[in-house]
Amino acid sequence: MKNNTIRVALATAGLWLATGLLATTQAQAPSSGGPSPQPAAVPLDGGASLLLAAGVGLGLRRLRRKQSAA
Image (cartoon, rainbow, N blue to C red; front, side, top):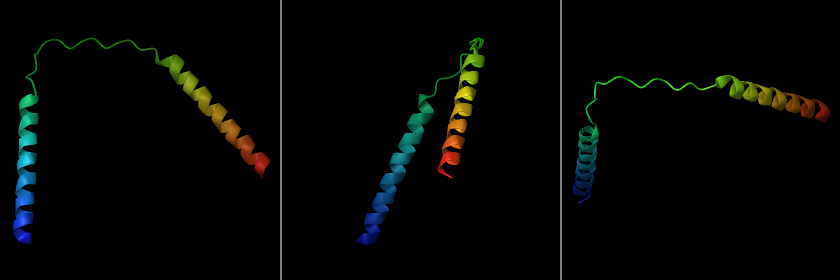
């Protein structure tokens, strides 16, 4: 009885897996072969410098707290 239940469970899982794989394969559309869109110009300099400044500030804050606690 227990072996039969395991076999049915494995067969059901395999069937669901196969169905999912087939649905994924059929859902992919063929490529158009057209030209690729031009990349968007994104200004990274402002955001990167803000992140760098925030990191430096956080590092200084942690160093000051560590020195005052010691």
